[in-house]
Length: 102
Image 1 (tube, rainbow, N blue to C red):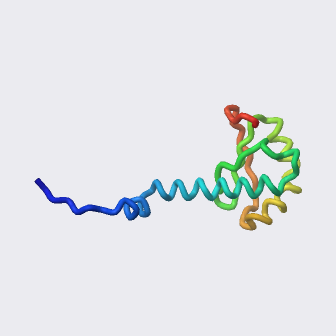
Image 2 (image 1 turned 120 degrees about the vertical axis):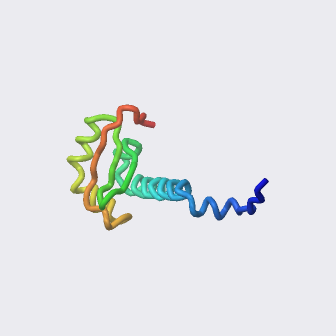
Image 3 (image 1 turned 180 degrees about the horizontal axis):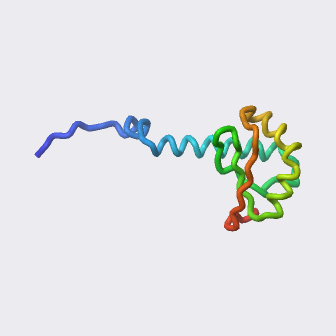
C-alpha cells in the first residue's frame, strides 16, 4: 500500500481550472449587475451578459425584437457601458429563445 501525502484542498482548488471558471462567472455577473444599474429602466431584465471576448461584450437576449431594439440604441448604450468597462468597444447580441424574461 502506497503512502500518499495529504494535500490541502484549498491549494488544490486554487490551482484548478474550476476556480478559474468560477472567478470568470463572478466577474461576468458583477459586470452584468453594474451595467444593469446604469442602463435606462426600459432595458433592464431584457438581456444578460454572457461573455467578454476581445473587447466585445456578448449579450444574450430572448428574441429578435429585443436584439434589434438594443442594436438600434447601441450608439447611446456603448458610452454608458464604457463607464464601467472602458475596454469594451462593441456589443454583440445573441438570441437565445430559452432566455426567460423575469
